[in-house]
Length: 181
View 1 (cartoon, rainbow, N blue to C red):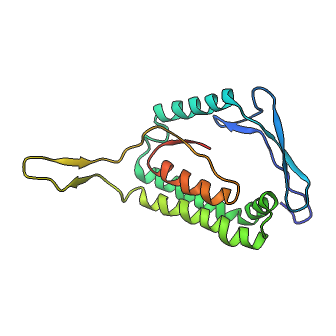
View 2: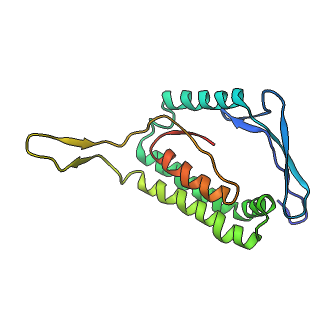
View 3: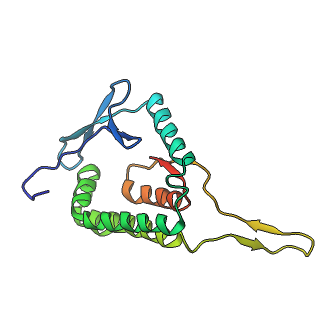
């Protein structure tokens, strides 16, 4: 993005890897608190859209395209994700500022960096967390196994959407789950 070009945003939903309008066609305006302008029109997803996203997440989980990846492969993807956040930090910080109204310097230093650091931390943890044997009497064995559970639904608040999304998405992905945000 050049310094003189106004950023543009695609307000369609991203479901099953495709940008789509809300099934019922409803939208809402995303208004910047910085200057009151409409940044984009966003798909107002309803029950049918949520069902489609969860179904896509379930299919992705069941076909094991993510959950079935070796821990080292999931780690590489998550580290690359963190690297990409940092590579696009200025653009992401501007987006966060336009959406939230906070100073761009703060968005860059705190929001983007914290999100990237969180994703990197969980990416690094992927191949370091394994099963454990819990302390038990001689007559028992208790094995703690960490495994993905399926589709994780993530809701983030308005005030720190990038950081809080990372806090929820990163551990879910590290464990091998699919995520619907």
